[in-house]
Picture 1 (tube, rainbow, N blue to C red):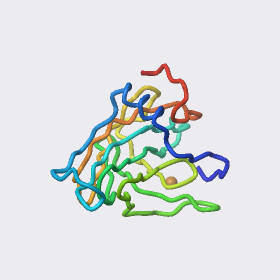
Picture 2: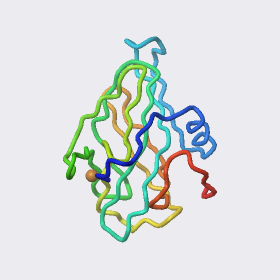
Picture 3: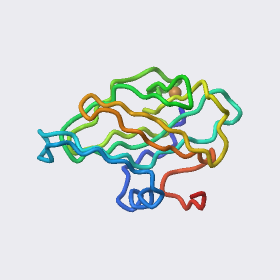
Picture 4: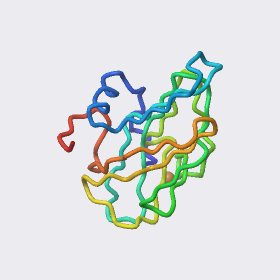
Length: 164
Ligand SMILES: [Cu+2]
């Protein structure tokens, strides 16, 4: 996760369409669907957990897209794990992070080599094909539950995947 060679390029529309096909998108619409100053309009793209290699912890990656006003990711929890924290990778290690801004009309990207989720204390050791629920709590949009698939360690969003 600390490798700087991983690409963290912006998510393309094609990638989002792939995830929509997987049925993992949940959208929260605010009452005000106005511009940048209005309510946040959040959707979650490309959620995945690389299969932890026998370890007690795993990383979680996803992109929070925002078509509305600014918001903030303040907390993440899971019914399947006792601890989910927000981390930021540094040159040599990682440190805790958050709350994380979700800019108006932009995106919060939790990706390899950058800000990510750290998941510990599994109630059951995850296996390939499992789906873990993550509950993302935002300052303005409330909690959005996301079903996050466990992928091979080498998985990258947008690559061909027959696991659905
Ligand atoms: Cu971490």
